[in-house]
Image (cartoon, rainbow over all chains, first blue to last red; front, top):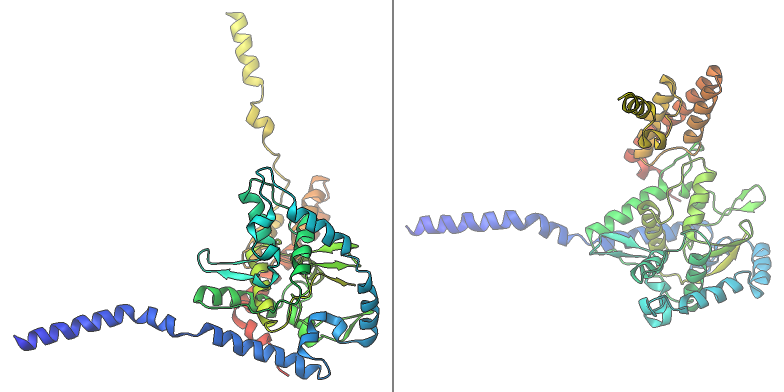
Length: 286
Length: 103
């Protein structure tokens, strides 16, 4: 009888262990450590490639690599072309909705929240970007969402970025779902696509610092620190996802929609790679 | 009775609202259909090329103008692009990690 009870208890314990084993295995994976190892390797690539450039200077993009361009850019930044957009963004941020609330009611810290985005929302199981949060606030308050690539969305984003300057990038990847999104972004970054069979990394890692006609190709490290940007080519301010779409078109690939899951995952991956740098947007670029 | 019959025949000849509102079927050929099917496959992988859809559209327009040769030429180009995009997507899904540069 005693043996039967012991055997029963043993079998029960075994069944319990087997049932909990997969989740225990998941909990045991330290996704942040996996990501941190990637960050170290990624940043190490650029520090080795450009030994004269300090890590924090990569937030200045291509201007961290070339002294002449840097000098011209600094002169331009004395009277920044995005200044009026930041002012307009501030007005939009504080403008009351029809219900009396405003964008300010959705964001803590007076709107100095650039450092909180992007993040992986564990309940929604998706990456949330700053632009997404701005439009979700508008919709939740009965207002129409802004367009995603330029105009008011970029202006509000520019205002938020401007009052958040200096906030440290510290994007966390805590769960399997967050890691999956990170890996999707990583795949999009490294996989070659389009008629030219090129990838983000092909240009912005392997060819970073080299000339593409008259332009110098920017390094991927720090890419997401300074958006939205006023691009001379656009003649106006635009969002990071507008830039992603432009890059994809340049290589002959059909771009994804701005704020699509694909581009949000890419932004998530790229921002994680810049962990340790500071947000310094908005900025001007060629 | 005569009036009712003529009214009924008039109604029978009148196109219904749904017929009037329905979008006209775009002109197509076997080659265009093949290219469109392949384009959708490359799109499902996230690897559609930039110009494939516009090439198919141009092929349809050429067909509408009665230029079968031009339409076939454009549709063939689109079919090549769609198949290449699909192959690219299938290859990258398995091998993208090999593209991570080392220094």
